[in-house]
Amino acid sequence: MELEYSIEGGDFSKAGLASSEVKKILKQVNIKPEIIKRIAVAMYEAEVNVVAHAYQGKMLVNIDPSKVYIRFEDEGPGIENIDQAMQEGFSTASEAVRQMGFGAGMGLPNMKKNVDEFFVGSVVGKGTTVELTTYIK
Amino acid sequence: MKLKDIIETLSLRVICGEEHLENELTGGYCSDLLSDVMGNSQEGHVWVTIQVHKNIVAVAALKELSAILLVKGLMPPNETIKAAIEQGIPILQTNETAFEVAGKLYNLIQQS
Image (cartoon, rainbow over all chains, first blue to last red; front, top):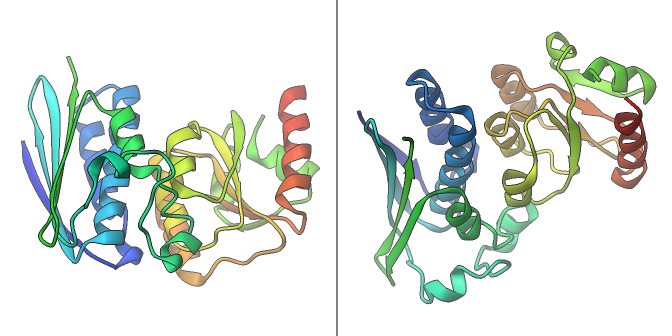
């Protein structure tokens, strides 16, 4: 099963909608609740990152009998130093975003902790790709 | 312990979600950082926070929390209430600070 959602950069009123939709579908296809919970944390963080940092992006979901693979592709400023971005507490979020309780520098580490395979690649000035893979068997 | 039990004992106001007050409470989490709540709260927790914007509902729904408890008499904007009703997340409110109400909640839940 393949699904695609678009994510609007800067629009916090819709942040989390795509993740909620995907979570419902994961429940419908009978993936174990404890696995769904982990995927939900990771994909929400990735979705919020697109909203908080990029101009626009998309979320591609591929569900097969062995795994759930989710790829986020965005057009945005990209990440200058991925090692630094992976450190808990490091964030480049704006003051406005931080006041909402986002931008605590926990997003990327939360993603990594909650999936089996995690990849982040970025081209400064172009955008960022995040891949989340979870094995369900 | 059920949500209605803490509402009664701690005199909490129910802003929305009256039909979900039979929700079981497994514990609580106290934080204003959304990623912290995403990463560390557990299903069935009551979430104590000062954040009132709409995104708290998405976090509570994704984590299947039993309720959001706003402190210091903070009122959520209408769009937050609307989202909470749609997602079936009760929003509660107290005039106390997070420290005060979390202490009382902790004792109540420990005793149950």
